[in-house]
Amino acid sequence: MSAAGLEVGTVKTVAKAPRRRLTPAHWAIIVFAAILVLSVLRVVTGANDIASSGLLIAAFGLAVPIAMAGLGGLWSERAGVVNIGLEGMMILGTFGAGFFGYHMGPWMGLVGAILGGVIGGIIHAVATVIFGVDHIVSGVALNIIALGFAKYLSVRFFAPLPGGGPTQSPQLPQLPSLTLPGVSSGLGTLEQKHIFFVSDLAGVLRALCTNVSIVTILAVLLFVATWWILWRSAFGLRLRSVGESPVAAESLGVNVIRYKFIAVAVSGGLAGLGGGFLALVAANLFRDGQTGGRGYIGLAAMIFGNWRPGGLLAGSALFGYTDAAQLRGGGTTVHAFLLAFAVILVGIGIWQVVRRGRTVQGVLAVVVGIAVGVWYFATDVIPAELSGTTPYVVTLLVLAFASQRLRMPAADGQIYRKGEGH
Image 1 (cartoon, rainbow, N blue to C red):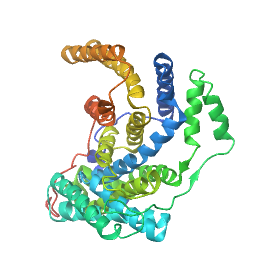
Image 2: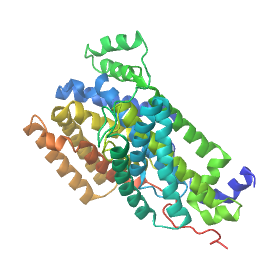
Image 3: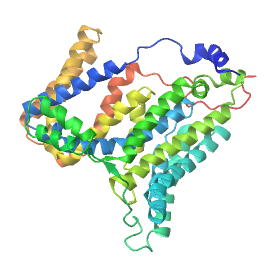
Image 4: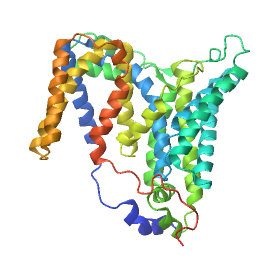
């Protein structure tokens, strides 16, 4: 079956209605606006670290594992398989990176991370695609099994090694990182002048060219490759048709089981790579509990991005930034966000009342926004117990505000049996 024939046969299922897409110009405007908002917030609140290159470098590092988990979820769910097991696949990836990285070097550590994730993906695919197990049940079970399995393997293989222990591996060799000499230092000098917007832009640019891990560059390339494969190739068209209507796809000659299996295996490999980043780049060792729920946040970033790579990348950057803000600045930096949050809530509330006619929701948003504003002016710092929850609170809020525009693949999560359309 040719790609053209498949496209004609599935046009009603894959593209039900034209939707507006963000062009590169739109993304440039969004980035410009975000830097401008951070500049205003820095000047008003005095939190100079809010757009510093140090915070942004940490944010990019924290965003990569979230982005890899989310990208894995995108592959799986575009083929119609819900992947709650991303956290477990990341855990297997961290162990694979630690074991292979210690014994065979950092590059083989990356390979081990991907293999660990692929194993988790295959287990999930066998359970859901072959045996028809509920996708949520299979994913939760995989998370629990992977956690226990990694603990056992850590005791078995790392505890006897010098520098290792029952909960961590010995120190791992480092992967290379890239810095643009001259450019990085020049932008750093401009950043320290604290010029409105100019210094903030310099901080962003410096973060993009200072100590950039080779895995970060690989992650960006994987996003580009995913976009091209899933939206510009015949293989990707068939895979997405499986996630929209497997019965229609099978009637056109597509091997639904094969495409689902491939998608979930790739999903596991990408999530495992995210775990490998945590072990090989972020910490240079495997540690029990290293993923810290980032598989779940990656799933949230994928939903926020409406099951598309561009939105997923933006969501991962947002969650990585909030995580870095609470780790570096603690309660002081997070406190500055209260003012921005208050203004955004009041603006959303007014928009809901005036443009959408939703009086109850609008008034509630305005009231909460005013309360947050009072909290900001009445305090100077957020307690550490609360600031640590910032990434998870932001995840919930973003999903709540984005829920109205989301559209998952039509057959996502459905149990499919071969030949059931006949």
